[in-house]
Length: 112
Length: 110
Image (cartoon, rainbow over all chains, first blue to last red; front, side, top):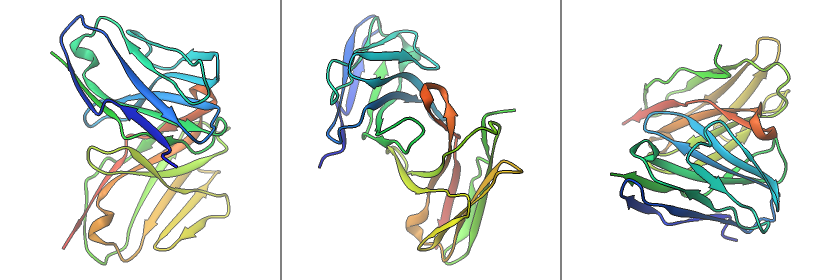
């Protein structure tokens, strides 16, 4: 049982490039989330999904897009990368809202 | 008032000591409460849920005070491996989900 997996672990992007961060969970959780965490700061919610085909914006969605075509996968797309998107990105899942969330190991992204 | 407030620390504590931290939350409708642990450059991991009657898991005890809207975490007989950042987490955030505090940094010294 792998839980929540994320790829890649690290990535360096040039300004203006695009990329997709992958997230997969094998716990059959309906809810999935994307957070970013800047150094010394708390987690900020980017996007979330309550089930396949349903996504919605969190606190800091600008510059990102998501899709949820299956229960297992919740990729995060960065379009036109900017230095302000340098951060650690965590994907999480939970069986229901307001329940404990399980996190993937994170993707460390640097935009230069 | 911030949604979930924690003293960022750091708390420097000798090995074997007892340490306690609190967090306060602003949403009186919150129903679920958790403590997470985050090691440096790692993902947050669930440490324990917090129940209304208080609960214990080994050396860790969590308490909830709904009237005053605070949650506490007590660590007894602290170990070097307890060094980490402890995140207070409360339901009622966006996405029908959770709101995370910024964390309290704990350093256990030999």
